[in-house]
Length: 459
Image (tube, rainbow, N blue to C red; front, side, top):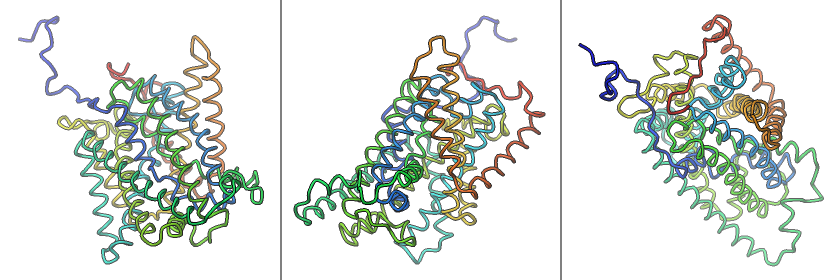
């Protein structure tokens, strides 16, 4: 005989769905975001930006920071409205149209899956510089397995590991600054023009170069949006997601500007040889501190990509969970939570398997080209969703809710249009595959097939 209808619940039974555990503080989010973006984010693309902007790297980094802050603001605002693990997928689906939300989520899957994959590739390659005798395949298995096993230890363990990684990278950045200071001291007295040339050098300045360089410098900030995927595991998400997203973007911009400013003081505006453009920052480090600093940065970039790979895999798993929970992809696999560790364990293992297999077939360079395709589609969608939610449908219309998302959307559209044709072609094929799958699954994206429902504690 069952309990009376009004009897108090005895607690969650065996069939009660598990929920993600709210354990992340604002500090955890900031550290996690910085590690995903990487404290040494501009070092990999430094040479490309320098050649395009003719030495004005710091200027492009600062302009890009202002541009991406608009998008970061939109992400934070939408996370306040919908503290959901689905991130842009949920925002666009709830505010614009479920079918568009699905396509944004599908585009984000490409971005999020590629990030841990390319981190697996570059970590394996960088390790071979230290241990040349170890086969590449063995290192791929080791790093893909490492990312997966550590993330399966649950969110708290991953947060602590990220704090250690961030601290180690910051120490190396301080060492780099110290060597640069010693190098500049050895140059003797320099006039004020020497210290202002990284911002503006009349001999090499051109608006076309700055414009082109800024479109590349935006890559420095890719990853900050991953913070919003942790909304369901964050304490007070309506406040902390917004603060963390904007703060991570600003901190990344200031730190990156300081790093490239120091590098430009050492290297100047001279171009890097095309065959050495990927090693540009280590070359700067070698000039400032010899081979010790060169190898230290090689090791640091390795550590940074370990942290980025772990954080990206964690964010990708939660994106898939958000889509699976709403049946955009198979719910029985992607929309479940491990009842003990309270993490989407199936998705973590799935992403790890893709990183393992893909690292044998996809080059680092091609992976980087494809990564931005999905990222900027998500950025555009979130800015438009923020405009609709906080301006079009808001009872009180404020100018900041009009200007910020429209500027963010416009800038992101321009950057997306300037992606390479191979990236747009491959990304377009991925979107087409998602469109066909979604249409078949929902009977032509008929209304009611995607609910985007929030749980009781999210609403």
